Length: 374
Ligand SMILES: Nc1ncnc2c1ncn2[C@@H]1O[C@H](COP(=O)(O)OP(=O)(O)O)[C@@H](O)[C@H]1O
Ligand SMILES: [Mg+2]
Picture 1 (tube, rainbow, N blue to C red):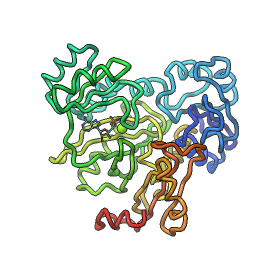
Picture 2 (tube, rainbow, N blue to C red):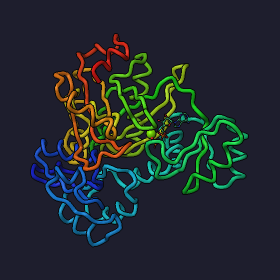
Picture 3 (cartoon, rainbow, N blue to C red):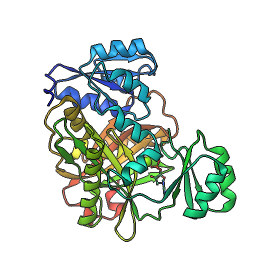
């Protein structure tokens, strides 16, 4: 086992977004410094970090200098090129490592991993490279179905729902880069996610599973805990822990799932990093997802993932989201968070707000009650 990082050590974070920013804030509370590496200057992460490197992910000299300045490397963004982590691996401990990153960067590898090593069922899927492959996949899976790029998709970008045969050719022409993956359309009752964390010594902890709602393909709301039967919530947590273990991960991992009307769960996506659906844990758990990530990466014992309050998390997206800020600031039951992004572009995640409720209260509330004032 590796010794824990001493207070005052430096955690290197690849990626400059809000996930790195909130990791750096949590790491600071544990007595660590953070050094953010990203191609964009004045990124949300850099604004709260001790040091920053502004350089492309392919800059070998900048990566070497970065590795010399940090004690451990993590990432807050799973589209960091695998080659970047490979270049860093001989120079500094990388947590998580490149193997986990590779699986989560590629929807085909991710699905094979979920069904195989992790033992989490997924919707039927077929790899699609050519239009002939797509015709064969549609014949097997049927319509409706969802066609997705295997790489670089996020917030619903890089996917198309195929409802009729006429949708097939335009979707194939539009989506790039190839290869693609065709998935059966899942008639889900709800979307759930669960976040697990695994330490250097292999111990795990898991947060309560939550229920997620999207708007324009972007996460809008998370309800914590998910209002589902206890056995469903436990199964969701167990799946997330299995994913962390089978990835041999050190750090936090989120598993997005679909809940079917018969109570079965299907795995959808894995994020080997803190996740938007876990932001509520900052304010409603003793050790939130960012603290857990910092603890795992630093080789510390994990913290308690116990939820001391129920919570509803609202994303503040674009100018519309920002317009709610002043009102949210005035509420005694809301913890407001802003990410320091200069431009309030439409569709951009600018912050979030977590409404805290007494533990156990959410189960008896209607959506209107849970969201009142948001
Ligand atoms: N196979 C599917 N069946 C039904 N809905 C889907 C399916 N795949 C994705 N979706 C919907 O699209 C959203 C985004 O898809 P996802 O695969 O999570 O990509 P990303 O989050 O990277 O954009 C999901 O949260 C879900 O609402
Ligand atoms: Mg997703």
